[in-house]
Length: 196
Image 1 (cartoon, rainbow, N blue to C red):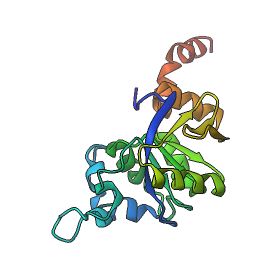
Image 2: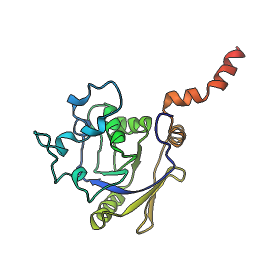
Image 3: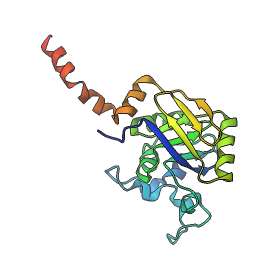
Image 4: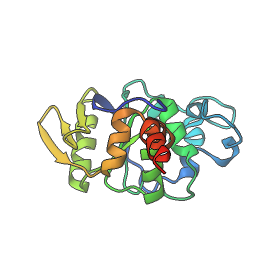
């Protein structure tokens, strides 16, 4: 199993309302030299989290103990820019299992689905409602149900549906990447090959 299985996630949200966040802001290019997927979370939003001497910036949301959770609530057009999958590795390695936004860059969204981070696209109105909820009460929780394909703000019961490709949905539920999916079909593949 490559990643955590995703079923129903109930969590608080970490709000990052900045729009047009590109992958170089998510993980700066100077941190792309690693050959393993580990350790990228340490440099998630590196230039926003730390000053030039490596000290945490107290006004950045990831350094604010008020906010925590496995859901990153992001501004519109999240993940634009280059196609680096390292950006999603950093998000996953930091501990986020879901990113919610009113719009994702396509390549970033696909990278999320390949790496075990569920990208949930909501309407701009619902995104605003979620930001308002977490601003009013940092302990506000949402429930993300991949089976029903819904996201629900638990304090109000307000809910929206989201789309996900059925193949990627099954992979997320099983914790599979594309290689795991094929390995899971090993018996069927061998039987097919034997019949040829």
